[in-house]
Amino acid sequence: MERNDAVMPLVAIFCAAIMWIILLFLFNKETAPEPVVVDPAVVANISKEYPTVGKAVFTSAGCAGCHGAEGQGGAGPKLAGNEDITRDPVYVHSTIVKGKGAMPAFGDKLKENEIYAVANYVLHSWGNNIEEPLTPATVAAGQAKVDPEVLKNRSRFVPEDLKLPEIFLATFIMVLLTYGLIGLYSVWTEGLELHPGVHKVRSTPIAMLAMVVTLALTVLFSVLFVRQMVQDYAGWGASEPVMPNVTAEGFYAAMILLLLATATGLYKKFFMDGEVLVEDASGEFPW
Image (cartoon, rainbow, N blue to C red; front, side):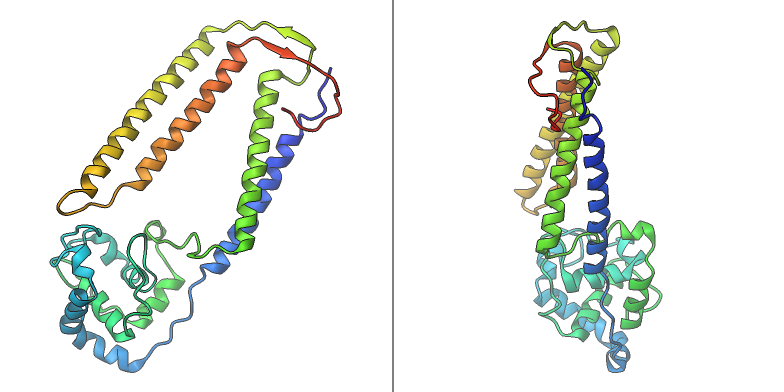
Protein backbone atom coordinates (compact mmCIF):
# COMPACT_ATOMS: atom_id res chain seq x y z
CA MET A 1 0.00 0.00 0.00
CA GLU A 2 1.62 3.22 -1.17
CA ARG A 3 1.65 5.91 1.52
CA ASN A 4 0.34 9.33 0.58
CA ASP A 5 2.11 11.28 3.30
CA ALA A 6 5.74 10.88 2.20
CA VAL A 7 5.94 14.40 0.76
CA MET A 8 4.54 16.17 3.86
CA PRO A 9 7.83 16.19 5.86
CA LEU A 10 9.61 17.94 2.99
CA VAL A 11 6.81 20.53 2.80
CA ALA A 12 7.17 21.14 6.55
CA ILE A 13 10.94 21.64 6.30
CA PHE A 14 10.49 23.96 3.29
CA CYS A 15 7.98 26.08 5.25
CA ALA A 16 10.38 26.13 8.22
CA ALA A 17 13.11 27.48 5.93
CA ILE A 18 10.81 30.29 4.77
CA MET A 19 9.91 31.13 8.38
CA TRP A 20 13.63 31.13 9.24
CA ILE A 21 14.37 33.68 6.51
CA ILE A 22 11.59 35.92 7.84
CA LEU A 23 12.99 35.53 11.35
CA LEU A 24 16.44 36.60 10.14
CA PHE A 25 14.95 39.74 8.60
CA LEU A 26 13.31 40.57 11.92
CA PHE A 27 16.60 39.99 13.75
CA ASN A 28 18.49 42.21 11.32
CA LYS A 29 15.95 44.97 11.79
CA GLU A 30 16.16 44.72 15.57
CA THR A 31 19.96 44.69 15.62
CA ALA A 32 20.53 47.50 13.11
CA PRO A 33 23.02 50.01 14.60
CA GLU A 34 21.63 53.28 15.85
CA PRO A 35 22.97 56.50 14.26
CA VAL A 36 25.92 57.94 16.17
CA VAL A 37 25.79 61.64 17.04
CA VAL A 38 29.30 63.12 16.94
CA ASP A 39 29.85 65.72 19.66
CA PRO A 40 32.91 67.88 18.79
CA ALA A 41 33.54 68.65 22.47
CA VAL A 42 33.77 64.94 23.29
CA VAL A 43 36.18 64.32 20.42
CA ALA A 44 38.44 67.18 21.48
CA ASN A 45 38.72 65.89 25.06
CA ILE A 46 39.04 62.15 24.37
CA SER A 47 42.83 62.13 23.98
CA LYS A 48 43.24 64.27 27.11
CA GLU A 49 40.81 62.40 29.37
CA TYR A 50 41.35 58.71 28.82
CA PRO A 51 44.66 58.35 30.77
CA THR A 52 43.09 59.81 33.93
CA VAL A 53 39.30 59.69 33.59
CA GLY A 54 39.43 56.30 31.90
CA LYS A 55 41.53 54.78 34.66
CA ALA A 56 39.27 56.27 37.33
CA VAL A 57 36.13 54.89 35.66
CA PHE A 58 37.77 51.48 35.16
CA THR A 59 38.27 51.30 38.93
CA SER A 60 35.10 52.98 40.20
CA ALA A 61 32.64 51.32 37.81
CA GLY A 62 33.77 47.84 38.86
CA CYS A 63 35.65 46.92 35.68
CA ALA A 64 38.81 46.08 37.62
CA GLY A 65 36.87 43.70 39.87
CA CYS A 66 36.03 41.40 36.94
CA HIS A 67 38.84 42.04 34.45
CA GLY A 68 41.67 42.60 36.96
CA ALA A 69 43.41 45.84 37.90
CA GLU A 70 46.02 45.17 35.20
CA GLY A 71 43.60 43.64 32.72
CA GLN A 72 44.80 40.14 33.58
CA GLY A 73 41.27 38.73 33.63
CA GLY A 74 39.23 37.00 36.31
CA ALA A 75 35.49 36.62 36.33
CA GLY A 76 35.64 38.61 33.09
CA PRO A 77 37.87 37.90 30.08
CA LYS A 78 41.49 38.99 29.88
CA LEU A 79 42.00 42.45 28.39
CA ALA A 80 45.79 42.72 28.52
CA GLY A 81 47.40 42.01 25.16
CA ASN A 82 44.04 41.16 23.64
CA GLU A 83 44.37 41.37 19.85
CA ASP A 84 40.64 40.88 19.33
CA ILE A 85 39.77 44.22 20.89
CA THR A 86 42.63 46.15 19.29
CA ARG A 87 41.64 44.74 15.91
CA ASP A 88 38.06 45.91 16.45
CA PRO A 89 37.97 48.87 18.90
CA VAL A 90 34.25 49.42 18.20
CA TYR A 91 33.59 46.06 19.87
CA VAL A 92 34.86 47.51 23.16
CA HIS A 93 32.51 50.49 22.86
CA SER A 94 29.52 48.26 21.99
CA THR A 95 30.21 45.92 24.91
CA ILE A 96 30.50 48.78 27.40
CA VAL A 97 27.28 50.41 26.17
CA LYS A 98 25.12 47.30 25.68
CA GLY A 99 26.82 44.74 27.92
CA LYS A 100 27.47 41.12 26.98
CA GLY A 101 26.88 37.86 28.83
CA ALA A 102 27.44 38.40 32.54
CA MET A 103 28.72 41.93 31.95
CA PRO A 104 26.01 44.56 32.55
CA ALA A 105 25.33 47.46 30.20
CA PHE A 106 26.87 50.79 31.20
CA GLY A 107 25.24 52.92 28.51
CA ASP A 108 22.81 54.46 30.99
CA LYS A 109 25.24 54.51 33.92
CA LEU A 110 28.18 56.40 32.44
CA LYS A 111 28.39 59.71 30.67
CA GLU A 112 29.40 59.73 27.02
CA ASN A 113 32.87 61.10 27.74
CA GLU A 114 33.35 58.45 30.45
CA ILE A 115 32.44 55.66 28.03
CA TYR A 116 35.01 56.79 25.49
CA ALA A 117 37.56 57.45 28.23
CA VAL A 118 37.36 53.95 29.73
CA ALA A 119 37.23 52.34 26.26
CA ASN A 120 40.39 54.16 25.19
CA TYR A 121 42.05 53.38 28.52
CA VAL A 122 41.52 49.66 27.84
CA LEU A 123 42.67 50.06 24.23
CA HIS A 124 45.90 51.84 25.25
CA SER A 125 46.91 49.85 28.35
CA TRP A 126 48.66 46.57 29.28
CA GLY A 127 50.23 46.05 25.88
CA ASN A 128 47.17 47.14 23.91
CA ASN A 129 47.63 49.99 21.46
CA ILE A 130 45.65 51.48 18.57
CA GLU A 131 46.95 54.17 16.24
CA GLU A 132 44.11 56.66 16.77
CA PRO A 133 41.90 57.04 19.85
CA LEU A 134 38.41 55.62 19.62
CA THR A 135 35.97 58.42 18.74
CA PRO A 136 32.26 58.65 17.80
CA ALA A 137 33.35 58.87 14.16
CA THR A 138 35.24 55.57 14.54
CA VAL A 139 32.16 53.96 16.07
CA ALA A 140 29.96 55.22 13.23
CA ALA A 141 32.37 53.86 10.61
CA GLY A 142 32.79 50.56 12.44
CA GLN A 143 29.05 49.95 12.59
CA ALA A 144 28.78 50.38 8.83
CA LYS A 145 31.71 48.12 7.91
CA VAL A 146 32.90 45.20 10.03
CA ASP A 147 35.51 42.57 9.31
CA PRO A 148 33.75 39.16 9.02
CA GLU A 149 36.25 37.56 11.40
CA VAL A 150 35.64 40.27 13.97
CA LEU A 151 31.88 39.97 13.54
CA LYS A 152 32.06 36.45 14.99
CA ASN A 153 32.91 37.99 18.37
CA ARG A 154 29.94 40.34 18.42
CA SER A 155 26.51 39.72 19.89
CA ARG A 156 24.64 41.21 16.97
CA PHE A 157 22.81 38.16 15.70
CA VAL A 158 20.07 37.95 18.34
CA PRO A 159 18.26 40.99 19.78
CA GLU A 160 18.67 41.60 23.50
CA ASP A 161 14.88 41.47 24.03
CA LEU A 162 12.92 38.97 21.96
CA LYS A 163 9.41 40.18 21.16
CA LEU A 164 6.25 38.14 20.58
CA PRO A 165 6.60 37.83 16.75
CA GLU A 166 10.13 36.44 17.10
CA ILE A 167 9.04 34.01 19.82
CA PHE A 168 6.07 32.83 17.73
CA LEU A 169 8.16 32.33 14.60
CA ALA A 170 10.94 30.53 16.48
CA THR A 171 8.41 28.18 18.12
CA PHE A 172 6.63 27.56 14.79
CA ILE A 173 9.97 26.78 13.12
CA MET A 174 10.83 24.24 15.80
CA VAL A 175 7.43 22.55 15.45
CA LEU A 176 7.74 22.35 11.66
CA LEU A 177 11.31 21.02 11.84
CA THR A 178 10.34 18.42 14.44
CA TYR A 179 7.41 17.27 12.29
CA GLY A 180 9.56 17.20 9.16
CA LEU A 181 12.46 15.30 10.71
CA ILE A 182 10.21 12.72 12.34
CA GLY A 183 8.38 12.32 9.04
CA LEU A 184 11.59 11.82 7.06
CA TYR A 185 12.75 9.33 9.67
CA SER A 186 9.47 7.45 9.34
CA VAL A 187 9.74 7.28 5.55
CA TRP A 188 13.37 6.13 5.83
CA THR A 189 12.63 3.34 8.31
CA GLU A 190 9.30 2.16 6.90
CA GLY A 191 9.72 2.90 3.19
CA LEU A 192 7.35 4.43 0.65
CA GLU A 193 5.04 1.43 0.76
CA LEU A 194 3.34 0.09 3.87
CA HIS A 195 2.62 -3.62 3.98
CA PRO A 196 0.37 -4.78 6.85
CA GLY A 197 1.88 -7.47 9.01
CA VAL A 198 5.09 -8.24 10.91
CA HIS A 199 8.33 -7.44 9.13
CA LYS A 200 11.54 -9.24 10.05
CA VAL A 201 14.78 -7.33 9.61
CA ARG A 202 18.35 -8.54 9.35
CA SER A 203 21.28 -6.29 10.15
CA THR A 204 24.13 -5.88 7.67
CA PRO A 205 27.85 -5.52 8.48
CA ILE A 206 27.68 -1.85 7.47
CA ALA A 207 24.71 -1.27 9.79
CA MET A 208 26.53 -3.01 12.62
CA LEU A 209 29.64 -0.87 12.02
CA ALA A 210 27.53 2.29 11.94
CA MET A 211 25.88 1.37 15.24
CA VAL A 212 29.24 0.64 16.91
CA VAL A 213 30.74 3.92 15.67
CA THR A 214 27.66 5.87 16.77
CA LEU A 215 27.71 4.38 20.28
CA ALA A 216 31.48 4.90 20.56
CA LEU A 217 31.11 8.58 19.61
CA THR A 218 28.29 8.90 22.13
CA VAL A 219 30.59 7.64 24.87
CA LEU A 220 33.39 9.93 23.68
CA PHE A 221 31.25 13.07 23.74
CA SER A 222 29.78 12.04 27.09
CA VAL A 223 33.29 11.89 28.55
CA LEU A 224 34.17 15.26 26.98
CA PHE A 225 30.97 16.77 28.37
CA VAL A 226 31.63 15.53 31.90
CA ARG A 227 35.25 16.68 31.73
CA GLN A 228 34.19 20.13 30.54
CA MET A 229 31.63 20.41 33.33
CA VAL A 230 34.24 19.46 35.92
CA GLN A 231 36.72 22.01 34.53
CA ASP A 232 34.12 24.77 34.45
CA TYR A 233 32.95 23.99 37.96
CA ALA A 234 36.54 24.06 39.24
CA GLY A 235 37.25 27.32 37.40
CA TRP A 236 34.10 28.97 38.71
CA GLY A 237 34.98 28.06 42.30
CA ALA A 238 38.65 29.14 42.08
CA SER A 239 40.02 32.13 43.99
CA GLU A 240 40.06 34.00 40.66
CA PRO A 241 36.90 32.67 38.95
CA VAL A 242 37.04 31.74 35.27
CA MET A 243 33.93 32.01 33.11
CA PRO A 244 32.57 28.57 32.11
CA ASN A 245 32.89 27.49 28.49
CA VAL A 246 29.17 27.31 27.79
CA THR A 247 29.75 26.90 24.05
CA ALA A 248 31.71 23.67 24.54
CA GLU A 249 29.17 22.34 27.03
CA GLY A 250 26.32 22.99 24.61
CA PHE A 251 28.19 21.45 21.68
CA TYR A 252 28.99 18.25 23.57
CA ALA A 253 25.42 17.95 24.88
CA ALA A 254 23.97 18.49 21.40
CA MET A 255 26.27 15.85 19.90
CA ILE A 256 25.21 13.35 22.56
CA LEU A 257 21.53 13.90 21.75
CA LEU A 258 22.09 13.72 17.98
CA LEU A 259 24.13 10.53 18.26
CA LEU A 260 21.53 8.91 20.52
CA ALA A 261 18.85 9.82 17.98
CA THR A 262 21.01 8.32 15.21
CA ALA A 263 21.52 5.14 17.21
CA THR A 264 17.77 4.87 17.80
CA GLY A 265 17.10 5.28 14.08
CA LEU A 266 19.70 2.67 13.14
CA TYR A 267 18.25 0.25 15.68
CA LYS A 268 14.71 0.58 14.34
CA LYS A 269 15.81 0.41 10.72
CA PHE A 270 18.23 -2.52 10.89
CA PHE A 271 17.78 -4.36 14.20
CA MET A 272 14.15 -4.15 15.36
CA ASP A 273 11.32 -6.19 13.87
CA GLY A 274 8.38 -4.00 12.90
CA GLU A 275 4.65 -4.33 12.49
CA VAL A 276 2.41 -2.25 10.24
CA LEU A 277 -1.27 -1.86 11.10
CA VAL A 278 -3.18 0.05 8.43
CA GLU A 279 -6.65 1.19 9.43
CA ASP A 280 -6.92 4.46 7.45
CA ALA A 281 -4.45 5.24 4.70
CA SER A 282 -5.71 8.80 4.27
CA GLY A 283 -3.91 10.29 7.28
CA GLU A 284 -1.31 12.99 6.78
CA PHE A 285 0.81 12.32 9.85
CA PRO A 286 3.63 9.92 8.96
CA TRP A 287 3.97 8.55 12.46
